[in-house]
Length: 524
Image 1 (cartoon, helix red, strand yellow):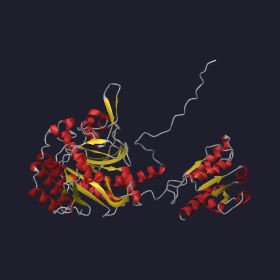
Image 2 (cartoon, rainbow, N blue to C red):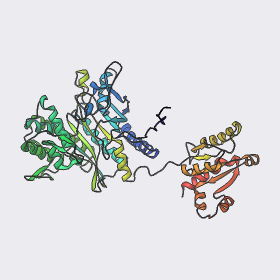
Image 3 (cartoon, rainbow, N blue to C red):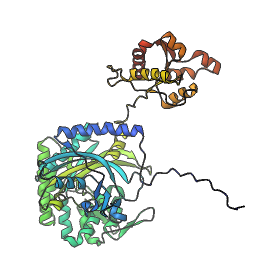
Image 4 (cartoon, rainbow, N blue to C red):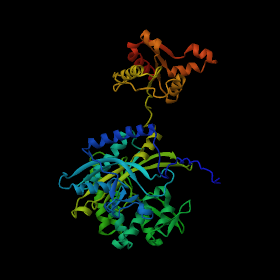
């Protein structure tokens, strides 16, 4: 006899991959509500939708990848059956550049478009940092003038207000990458050979809000070790070069080991004041001066359109973390306070941003095709709106439940007809009809049907047995009122006798009575 015992097959452990999340019905509905408001602003500005696939050939993404220190340089990749590498998109901008290049002869330029979709980052996950998240982008391709950049900043401001975020609770911060490029050229980081170090500098500065001054200073130098012990290599700048960069972020040295961010002599809220300081007192070379002049033009355009410094202003710390930006960059920042995962009170921070990327389409066509756009982080913005009480306050009403007392085909047909009558009952209160479902579980245990209605949060249950059918009536059970009355009944016998919250109506009056009851429940 064999000593081996037959092994039971092990159950598979249900688990989510790290950095990914399931979404609830409430989150999905809140997202849909928010996205509809964003889309309405974009449509009002004359933008049209387009959609690109989740996968792109990896070479189409090029060197513009978000995290070169991770496997596959920050993206999730696989090899196709023809041995070509494909990657899940890490943003919606690189795929748009490919789409425009591939259809350049059919697309009318300037091409004004918006897109919504999931993007994927092969990065280390953490609190509030996911490997899959949704973005909503708007772009203008084929517009060389900074008026297109000014319009993006204005559209971002209008979007914030369309979502119910009051002036004073947000600001659109604008800068120009050419200014920082000029500074980096001045400290010896110009040229293709320093592209990697420049990208490290950009990513370091882009993390100022999250890591603070000290964290950025470490990343500009030798590198930084985070709380988990992981080490991120830095740009390798000496103290003097790092200090020149920090000065342009309005960060000054207090002593040998301490830096602080200060309000500069030039008032940040005033475009002209900052530009005057930039052009006359800074060693930024011709590249930086060109960026300063573009910022001045943006300032004049947004002011002429009525957007004051309470809505759009310059901030030299805005750089954006991707290398493909070539000119103006901008971020939408929320200014109200929240409590973070460490229990600290902080400003909510950035919920979106973008800028000019004149080189992306050229990689495919060899021709200059200027472009600018911005991206909204949908999940992060949704969290912000919930904090403000601007989203998800109107919960979707659960469906009316039509219970089942008999399981033969003829009876099921009758219950399905009652359900359909409710669904088709359009009225002023319910312009799309009444949400309704027929019970699909084991109909023989009626008590389970009412327990299901309770767990589902159904406002009303419809009951019709053979006796009710012969009399031409239905029982309507007000589940909300029934729960209130049941709480005051002490015994099961009394509960069954009282049948709390339940009444009968003629079958022909079902729709009218349910409509009236649901309206009364909604009113309080």
